[in-house]
Length: 338
Image (cartoon, rainbow, N blue to C red; front, top):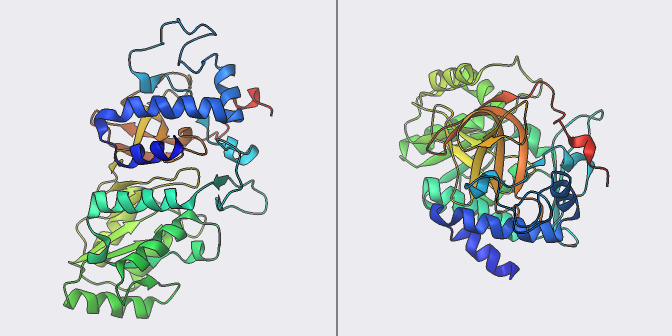
């Protein structure tokens, strides 16, 4: 049954999303103690109904709006697993010695790899047509980063001799990019924001065959800039028309991608909704507010996540991220003590 879930998830079309998401919800309600307790506190049962009776009518006709979304901060305070297992990998968010980091226990790392490979190919085509260059200096210092694992796998799958990580080797990176441009080689330069800004300002060039993708991440390395300011510096410095972006996080096993202007699109097994900041149970398919994510690849953790990112979801399902909630403690988290 669980293998059948995974096959369904990665062969999904948008038309079958609600039905499969309901199956995943019921599976996680039955086998995830933390999530089930959260659902019960919200008085939502396994049939997505209010109260105990299975005959109660759902709250809305849109099934996706009925799912209880687990506050993302629970990944800092609880062990979030669906079924009992020994994790193959534990992804951990970055932080300081004063902060509590999120931990995502991954039962089967093959699911994560299948998710990011299929998502990349969905948006960018065959990986072996690309040269993949990772500029992720701060992340390379950690051995539990989901981003590093993803980029490392893409580098290996590209099978290109120039694919690889470049720590702080800007001279080498500049000469490599220029050589690849001469060959008209499709290249992905994926980097943490502060490193891309440093490179663009100090090594200006005109890239025509390279996609520059920022993954976020300033972390006090530079003055905080708006997305428009960041993209302006990179486009002016590197000569690209648009800056692509990747939206992912420790607590998710899927990524959304933007091919410019900060508008992200999800792969078929992922969906972003929006909730009211003052009423976390008021969820809509479009509008401004705080973002909720359904990531069906999170089959063995929790697929229904209430993030702390503020933005807008458009009617076609694409979305933008504007920033974080000022007060990142989601209302209601104190209800659950396990």
